[in-house]
Length: 332
Image 1 (cartoon, helix red, strand yellow):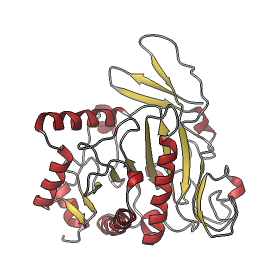
Image 2 (cartoon, rainbow, N blue to C red):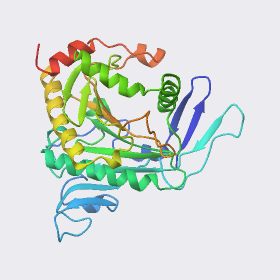
Image 3 (cartoon, helix red, strand yellow):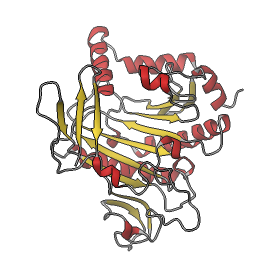
């Protein structure tokens, strides 16, 4: 059971999810894939997780058995779930929202030693097809206002288990970060009669100094206001608002872009660098026509978040995005 508490002075929600405390490694360093570690995500351990809700598997194999390439199941320790309650006080100063929604785990590969960004292109396409399926499923559920995918890779990035996996959350709100951004995008369109994101991508392509990938379907660059060293954001070249509507061609080029860009970041930082990944798409109640397009953000965790960031809400970055992009492209 979980709840969201809102701080109106800061414009910030905090999710209180007591079920997360039951995780085997809560408040502890994540385990390593070493002898003696019983990996619940490993091939053959399907019975150690909740039953799968989606899988890409060999024909003739049964659910919750070996034979899968991609496997999705409810999070055993969810931050958001269908049935919840409020423990917060009923008071005008203390706004509380029930943490209804969904929380799923997506196992990206049965190979315990392989990470998402190093999967073959076809496997990455299968993974993104699974994401499309789950996005479409949760968008149809009552009370869900937004659906996102995120990934924690490495202990410093928040991963509690080393086997490569992502998580999908269906939320009863649109997070303030995106509320602010979406309001800006709508107002910019109304005021200027053109899309801010269209103009942004056109400008990045003209300047080229922050571009790390460009193809017919996908563009990726280090944002002008990057919060993390070597931060990269991927956009579709066409104004596609809903990730679930991407064609196979878009998914293929996104997969190729991820493999290439991650390899560039790794050469610029260190092997198997920790990172967070976040996939943002249009809120459930919005169409986003003319002002929105989905995006995939990658935050390498090679710098560190310290007192300045947590205290001020501002970010300190030691690598200019133009320098980062040049390094990722291998032009240093």
